[in-house]
Image 1 (cartoon, rainbow, N blue to C red):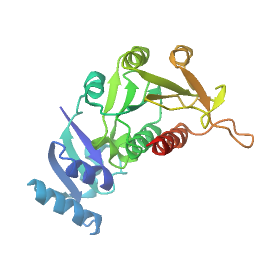
Image 2: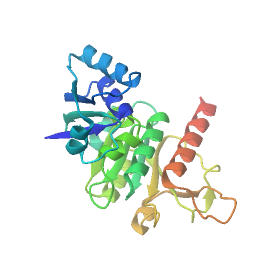
Image 3: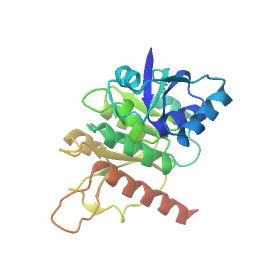
Length: 243
């Protein structure tokens, strides 16, 4: 099964990460610069890029928002939560998303998780955005470097993390303590809810702690991808202090 990656960053990082790529297509007449980098990466990988009309790329991926670059790749690099847990060295950090619907938000969370050194992002198979071309592009290529694991049941995944000695921190505006007051010692699972409803009740009950980001002003909460970035970098800041 094949899939498409679109956009300069997504295709460049897929090439650099050694992703199994069938072919790279570049729009004729596209300006040099980023395209030169992609052509050079293709040459390094032994891939001959194809140059086609922009209209041909539009038809291939059913969108005009491809920046003139498309890669046809093997669909999905499946990795299980068990495999990730087996390979963690030191204090683990896993992000769990409880039904994020917007692929842009998903991609942005994946980007922040990778930047923070997280071991994986876990998402549900149903009622959630998946790693589509839009999400991959929003991640700026981070999906090539951090496992994004789709699970049938988020609560079962949380149970699995607990069995592996993870403390679960649910980020929720109804949390009893500020995210700045939490400990974050040991293995940490950062759990975030959907854009509209936050954490589901059962998911919140699975968490060991519910923490909130204090907000100044009338807007009650942050965008989920922004909240993820704020919390993730507080976790790594705190861990840096304890080293």
